[in-house]
Image 1 (cartoon, rainbow, N blue to C red):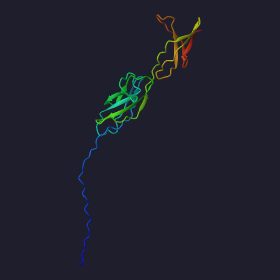
Image 2 (cartoon, rainbow, N blue to C red; image 1 turned 90 degrees about the horizontal axis):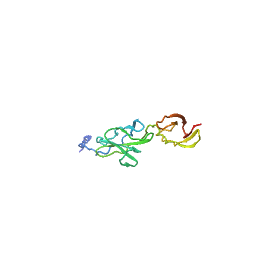
Image 3 (cartoon, helix red, strand yellow; image 1 turned 135 degrees about the vertical axis):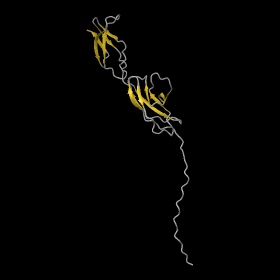
Amino acid sequence: IPHTVPPLAPPDPPLPSNPISLTTPPSVPGAPVAPGLASRTFNSLKVNWAPPGEDGGLPILGYKLLIAPPPWDHKGPILQGLAEVYDGASTSLRIPKLSPGVPYCLQVQGRNAVGLSQMSEASCFTTAPACPLAPLPPIVTAATAHSVALAWMKPDGQGAEVSGYTVEMSASLSPPSWTWVADICEGDTCCVVGG
């Protein structure tokens, strides 16, 4: 007996599964951007930084700022040449008690409840130069009845080259009455006074 078979209907689309919700565990934040220079003096640097682009899924709780070389009065630990100078929530800091004309390199880390981020790239900034230190008293290298030859050691320029010296003399030290004798150009650390 001949049978007629109806055409097959396309299958119904499959039903999706029930959705599930997944939460990945939080992690430490990403490294912050390297610190930027806000201002400088001969003995301080003011730096600022931005929060990391990736917080690891938790709020940023604070930052650690590290510097090399350390400030002259630093008493804390120094790890891998870096001294921790700040641990707090601010994104800017003035670092005092630095030496004039010295380059300092800084790195920052972000912290959330999981832990510390990797360190940022380093930023290096130089403090402003200051007036040179006073030279030690000159020594007499030769003397005649009418003149004296003097020499002295070049002092620390505190971040800048010493560009010259002014020589003064006083006939009496009690009380002194200083009189200009000569201006000496850069590089010379001796002169003859009198003639």
